Length: 146
Image (cartoon, rainbow, N blue to C red):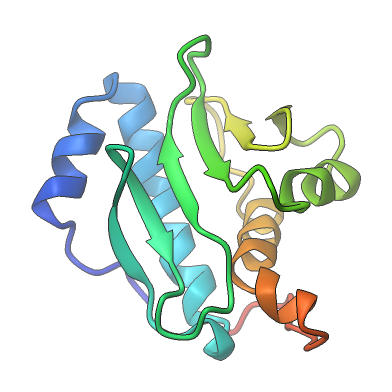
């Protein structure tokens, strides 16, 4: 699945970032939608702004935890932000200790150049999009559909 058209407010938010960060986050946005499409249990994503940053919610099903795209003030990396009250970033760190840079329990950081680690990142996004299913004892699928 390709990502839907970019909503005007999301485009503005990404455009306000330094160009390399905005470009990287557009790649991540596409991967968020592709990953959600691979998980029927996630349902259709809601794309909105939270705290002025693009945010992706599984509002239709409640299966996941919000994913936000932005940057941290003290970093030149693109940031994928998660609810700090979840175990998501700790789970990512355990699975991929050397693949990504992390900030506390809230962010996964990506360099703005180089190849996007799509497989590893899609696994992290899958965990976020199905976080509440896992907490309810339902087993999400971590593989991706073609």
